[in-house]
Length: 500
Image (cartoon, rainbow, N blue to C red; front, side, top):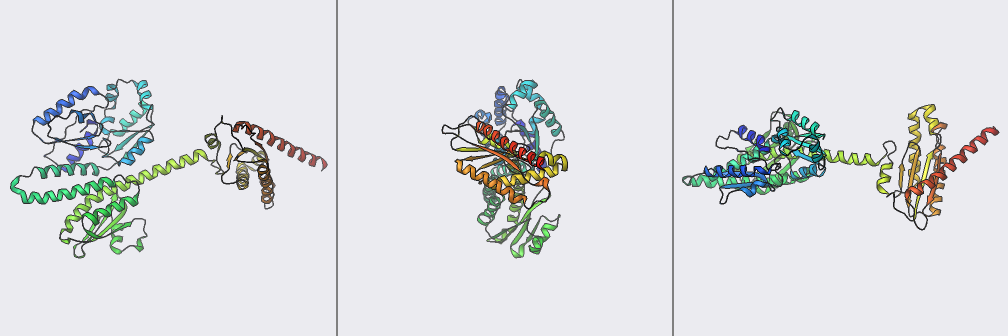
């Protein structure tokens, strides 16, 4: 196994006490191709010892081309060399958003690895920033120095980092399955009957592990639970399966399920007389739900089924935890996308959205640009405070939004400035929009007692000519007309004041 992932797998073997297993690290050739000769010698030496060997790697690893022929090695190949840490879709999501996944073995020797690549700090920063936005480290909690080393690497490369906890159970389960298969293979011929039974068990494990591998690909809870149900109904021969979600109200649950939800000490309940068991799905002391399985076709094997189920549930807890983290990342990304295109105060589109949606150099035909400005906003802010000014802005935004169609673009582009862009707009339509605005302001102001909260909006619009015009040109024309309207209102107010 690659030296970059050696610590996690070594820990998995030590924890499970496999005294008949040796783990050997071959050198990483990702950053140093000169290590191929060393890796090839290592494989030849291992094979000459006469021991069975399993090579763990990703499908693009250089080690695959170095395996001796004929070979006593078998291979376990995955899409990514770090797929034991998280499901494939989660890894793809991280890579697609610019994450650079680093392993414990790599981060704990990062200075030597950077040096092997021939980089100093300046060239290293240039290299990694060319394709990475952040460093992503899956932390199994087996190294006390990992976070300090990660922080030093982050500062050295001037890249942010994120630590994602992952449970060691998935790595332990992978090691355990390989060891069990190997032990079965090495059984002597004098134990044929026993061996046949174990081979059947191995086949069952293989099917279950295959389905568990598929479970790890899912990114939503519903598909995950359906695949768990398939394991129990199709492979283990259960006739009934029920998943009790932790979000279900406790009083609505059967008493047996309530006991599992409320007790931190009881992971499962076996009722042999009822041909039934319940198992709690947890991860890091967090409860996700309880599976309720019953009416097995071969009740005499229910204890064996329970042991299978306990292994399955360990992985399912990890998968559901990963799904929860994945959903949080997606929601956070969606919120960031929304905030980047919307004004926080009014909920209208912002200037950034307008710039992204409409090309600055493009000539648009049959389009109208409206520019608006709130009259008296400075007066409201200065005399009554910005909270009152914000109320005025929100009222103006709501009026403007109500005057246009859902397909039109209405945006707040400054403190008291708004723009509306209407495609396929004629002069008659534009006049109707402006008339609707005046009526809406009168209707709104009739219900407002405080004068400083009565909405007055000055506006102007410009229509593209036959040859088309850019949004910027139309904005300047509309803005000029808006200021003419604003000046006219100001002149009228002064005249009224003189008469009084």
